[in-house]
Length: 229
Image (cartoon, rainbow, N blue to C red):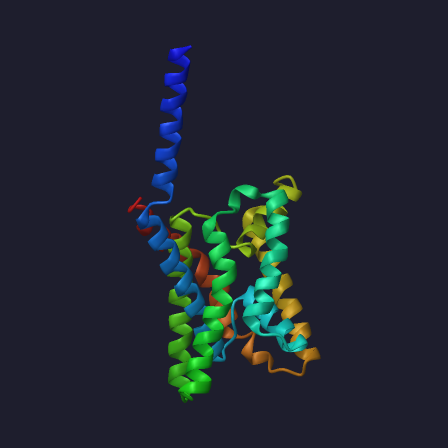
């Protein structure tokens, strides 16, 4: 009996050690920096005027239609998605999921407010291109950092996993991601037209650059960052 208790204590100690290793300062730091970079990326894409990533495209289109703050609407959508994720691919949820879904939209709103309303930053073609480059770089580096930390992924990033699971792996992750991205862009465009907004602010070359470059760049940076764990 004493032997069993000793083994149980050792196993409990091992589990606690694993938890501490998973939630180490390095992992948390990587996760937080990554999420801040993603928020900065969304802001840079919005200020570039060359279009944004598919998920932001949908949320900007709808928030422009219903008059709601972008960050607030994105949080609502993330909460809805989180409920779906909880009942389908629960393993994708972690502390990073919660921080990501709450902070990214508001970080982007705050930075756009500072640059456009407080500073009245003059945006010219060179600065538009600069914001596009910064947005693309920060998107890939940010995603790679918070994914490498393995503390949970954003609700929208879990949608492709939900689709593949629902299709019983008959649909590849890549195709599922493409399908979800196209759906988001279409929804964003429809609501932007209904609200008489400028389509160039939500869809454009930035959307295409994000779609084609983000995946390979995330994979490149993620391999670099994973060496730290």
